[in-house]
Length: 338
Image 1 (cartoon, rainbow, N blue to C red):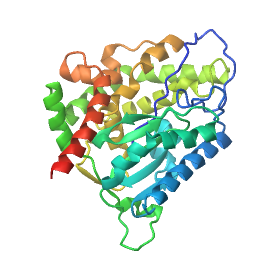
Image 2 (image 1 turned 180 degrees about the vertical axis):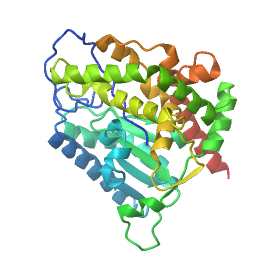
Image 3 (image 1 turned 90 degrees about the vertical axis):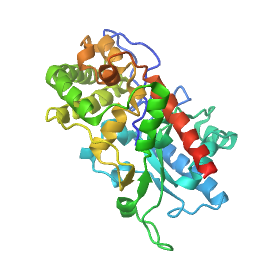
Image 4 (image 1 turned 45 degrees about the vertical axis):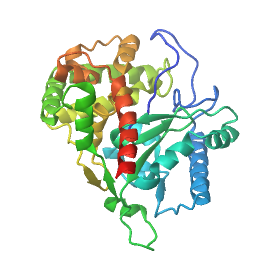
C-alpha cells in the first residue's frame, strides 16, 4: 500500500517561527483551512469516510466481507514496527477486482463529494494517487486512505470475514505485465531488483549519516517549536528513508513484487513499491529538507533519483504516476476484450 503525499503549501525559513499548527496536520489533504487533525478529528474523519463507503456499497448490493473490506485501523493488520510512519496515517479499503473500478468512479463522483462536503463544511475535491496494478490512494480530502483490488478474500462462502483472514487474501499485482508496459512506453527495462539493492547499499554507506543528521535537526526544530508538529510531513518521510537505508547496509533493502500476493504485503516489498511505482511521491522532499535544515544531499545518495542512476539519464518521476493510471485503464480494456 502506497504511502500518503504530504507536501507543504507555504515555504518556511528555518529561522522563522511560524504559528503552532494542529497536531498531525495532513498538508494538502484537507480542503478546510482550519481543519484540525487532532486525534479526535482524525477519528471522526475516518468514521465519516467508512460510513459513506459502506452506505454506497449497501445501496449497490455489495456485501462487506464478500465484496469489500474496510480496515479503519492499519495496526490491526501490521505491527507498528513493520509500518513506516507515513503508513500509519491512512486506513484501507479493499474491493474485489471485478468492482474496483466502480468504487473508483464513486470516489470521483459528485455524490461522494457532496457527502464529504457535509462533513467537512467545505468543498471536497479528492484526487487519486496511483500505484502498482493501478491501485490508488485517495488524498487531498481529509485523512488519506489506501485502496486495493483483490482476487479473493480468503473466507469460505457464507463465512463471516474476520480481519485475521487477511493473511489469506489474494491480490494480483500484474507486476510482470507492468514491466512489459513500462518497457514499451518508456524505452527502458524496469529497474532490476539487484541493481536497486546494490545502489541503495552504496547510498547507505555514503549517505545514511546525512539522512540521520537531517532527521535529528528536524526533530530538534520540532521540539523547539520552530516548525509544525508534523514537520511539514518531512519527519515521517525521512524516517521512512532511514528505515530503507538501514536495511540497505546489508545489501537487502528491497524485495520485488510477486505477480500474486497472498496476505499483507511484506515491508521490503512495500519499500520496493515506494521507490519504484510511488517514486513521484518523493519528488521535492529532499530539496525541502535542505531548505529547512541546510543538510545537503548529493545526487549519489538521493533515493529519489534511483531511476536516474539505473538509466544513466534524467527520469521524470511524474511519469510513473501517469503510467500507473494508464496501466489501470489498459487492464480494464484488456479484461473487457477477453
